[in-house]
Image (cartoon, rainbow, N blue to C red; front, side, top):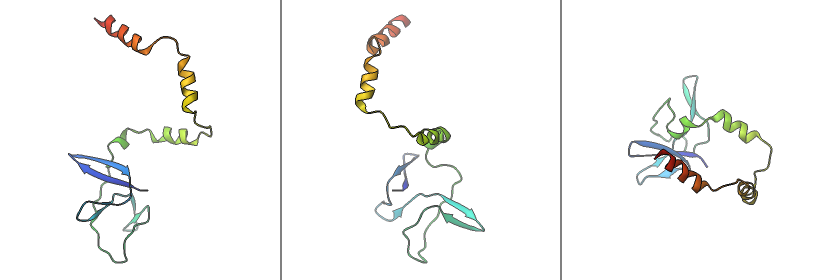
Length: 113
């Protein structure tokens, strides 16, 4: 699966989907590198030889959420070789926390007046 840019209402979001057909044409957003006077896509393209395409170039990430992600941290988390906890393990640990979250929220709200 590849990231596809979907635009609407002035926003652009990238979702992991294959090529998208908008009723008139195939639309795809991908990353490329400019080398030796040519753009080299960083993933294979499903195009025929000598097929003409329209290219829009941006040096800014189109995915607005991508700018907020700490990619270095996410890579370090992905590198951890521990199994993920099961839902039951998480529930067991959370059940040991004393008190009630709803009561704590109400108390804080009441304290503010």
